Length: 344
Image (cartoon, rainbow, N blue to C red; front, top):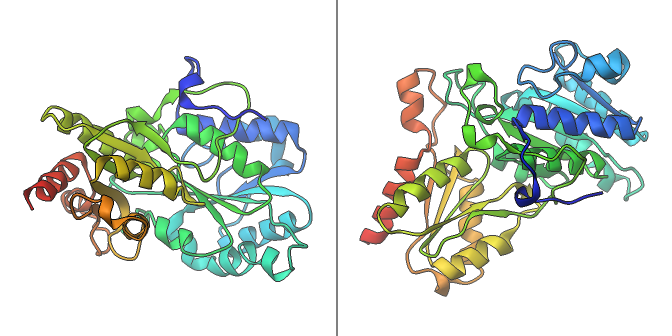
């Protein structure tokens, strides 16, 4: 097992969708207990491209298209994992969790605890998150905080292809259930719009990225910007804009929510003294508040200014493009948050 970082990735670039598919294929070749289930994961290759090519190589026994019944196929995956298999199951949109939350949280997340550790549930639940392409409030949420809040599951959110491949490999090998949340705008699917910064150098060989370890995407001295998924790219653009004003921003990519690498965040804020958290999930009761609390509870004296957060307002996601774009986090809002911080 190899653990790599983006600095030793070589020159071959992949989209996140291709990186996820490649990691899955490599683990399926190495371990016959790994298989894939979900809606349109077979010949279509997944609506968001992350199972493309798997059906052609492994066939319908190991890449199974399912009926439109999330409760049924996630429940089946829990049973298979409990019986020694390593299923990867796709919940096409995270918004659909409402119809299958019992299978996710009362079985997938809890069965190891209920059995006193005798029953492992080594499965990956991968699901798409995020909006920005006018698909309405039932197809555009992130809900990171919802899954991170519930004990028993690991939760990962990659921002680039290198991390997506390494995190997927680590998730498949993990004996715990892992929720793998990928943002649609980072997948490399042209019809969704593509964040160029997510397509990065990615090694061909199998490797892992440690679940529970954040990355410093940009080193800085004046303010810490913390985010995950698509928000990391907003932070990098904001850091560039702030740099033109003479402000040296540090950007922390959480990569995992459970376990949460609080120490990397605290170390960064101890250096900069200022914190802005960016989250496409809802403003209240979520990741942004948890990150701020992690710093404030640890060392309030290190803060030179009150922390800020740039998150989705507590409203249903609008269908109208102009309204949705008004609500979404972006680099300009992050820069404005910094200016407000410094004006107080």
